[in-house]
Length: 443
Image (tube, rainbow, N blue to C red; front, top):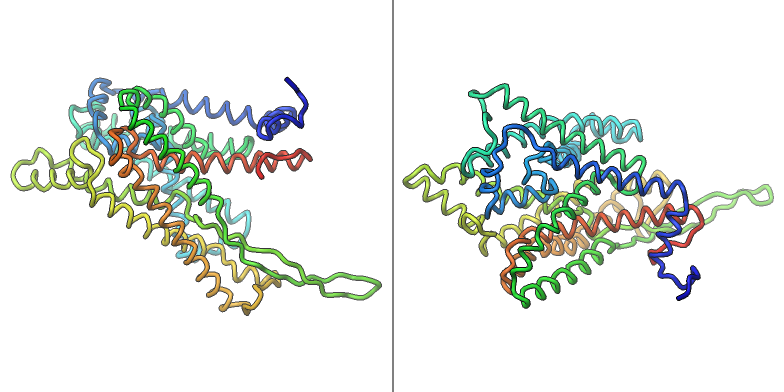
């Protein structure tokens, strides 16, 4: 066995180089420590919870299983971190949508770092009422699934205990956001994304008993889907359309000024929207079944309509959706992909930035023609990204056709989040190594 550095795998050697550097090692250990703190908090329950009723509420409930994924299983424990960072993500999405529409927000964005910090502060403020509303709705939904899970909850009968419970859930969410920002500042990777990543990974071991009861053919089919899905996610996450750009610069030689031409490119990502369209689409698709669940004991035609909505949008009381459900989900993902991509593209103002820097696209005039050209390119490549995300959303449907695995109905979204976070963290670690003159591991 040889121990020479040149014979080691690139990834292993890169990890060794990372731990040899004291500052990089501290960043990695700090990130791991914050994730451990997050997992401890995820097991601290809120008061007045009936554990037996909580287990019954989660049995075969696809909606609660979906919500539990983004909390890292904390919702299934009804811990102080039951909401996860999802209220903060919702607030961030709202602020990104409002920024190009509200003149004051748009001017703050153009002010640079100081303006972005002000917008970030507004996002934190918005996350507080978002967490309160979401926490109240989720507990009402959990209590309505069967026997009351959280005792003495609800207005106007129990105002003080309700306020205390909502304050606890909101504080848990903001604590996780604070942990995420600490990771971003002092660790490696995007903190909020790593919090979601840690939660999803922590849930996976609990699925092993369910998978062990599945047939060999089903397990092999699911493994094949997983490998193929990981390949597609990596391929589309890294796919870019590089638009060539030329720019003029001045240089003094021999007391004279010369104009030199430089070349570069604009990397337009095929999946510019990330995982946001999936979250939007799933949130809308679970809404009809959520509302219908409140009327399943009303009797008469109201109960019949409620059962019909649950059958169509949840595949029954413990199902995972019917054919029309997956078709509508696929179309919603495509629509939201285009919507969110265009919102992001408008915020970047690429044509104006190129014009200010004296750069231009060969064969395209600066100004409105450049804007129109870039819009056409973004629209074309977004079709590929939209169909990719749509396929990711309906992968559980195809798994159900060839396998009897019912426990991973939202696994495709989890796959996308996990792979995207791993890629981003690897890139940041790669950058840290290259800054210190070490060879990276991403080719």
